[in-house]
Image (cartoon, rainbow, N blue to C red):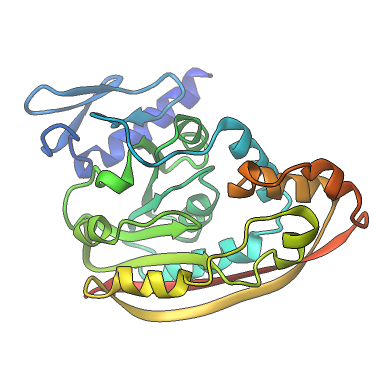
Length: 289
C-alpha cells in the first residue's frame, strides 16, 4: 500500500472517530496515530489494510462473506448490472441530506462498499462508515471511497456508534438490527432498506439452483420495523439484465447460493450465451417511530 493511500484511509477513520464507541465499555473513541482508543484505555489498532476491527467477546452467530464471495460480488457490480439499484439508493440518500451540510451515512453489511460509495458521491459533503462483520469486507471497504471509513463489527450484537449520530443508515441485501439502528439515527434520520422481491433473479432458480426469496420476507420486515420505524416511502426497482455465463457464475458465487447451488458450472453452461434475468427489489425509506 502506498503511503498516500494509508494516510487517506487513516484520515477517513479519524474523521468519524468521534461517533464510534468502544465495544468494551461503550465510551467514545478518539484518534491517535495508527489507533483508536477510549478514555478507559481500550485501544484498537488500525489494520495495515486500512480498516479497524471492533469485534470483541464470544463468537457471533452471524457469518460474514468470504474473500471469494466478495471477489465475485465486486466483479458483478463492476459490470453495472446493479447500477439502477445503486442509483435508487443514492437518490433516497439525497432526500435525507442537506447536500451542502453533509452528515453521516453508515452502510451496515457493506460488503464491497459499492452502494455506500454511490451514496457518498451523491452527497459530496457527507462522511461514510462501512460496517461489516467480515475482515475481507473491511479490506475492500477501506478503499471503496475516500470518505468511507471501514469498520469490522457485528451489527447483530449492536452497532459501535454513539447514539443519535447517523443521518442515514443503509441496509442493502443485508441482515437488519432495527433496534440498534434506531438508537444510532439522529433526529430526522432515515433508514434505507433494500430487499429482493420474489421476481428477483427468478429465471435462475430452476436452471441454476439459485436460492429462492423467502415469501414471508415482507411480513418479517414489517414486523421487525413495527414500533421502531415508520415507512415514509417505498418504491420497486425492476428491470431486465442480459447476462453472460461469467456474470451468472458471479451471481451464484457472491451470495447464499454459493453454499447451495450444486454443479453450478455445468448448469450455467447449458444456458444460452446471453441470458435475460430480472432484477427486482424494493427500496423502503423509514424514519424512527
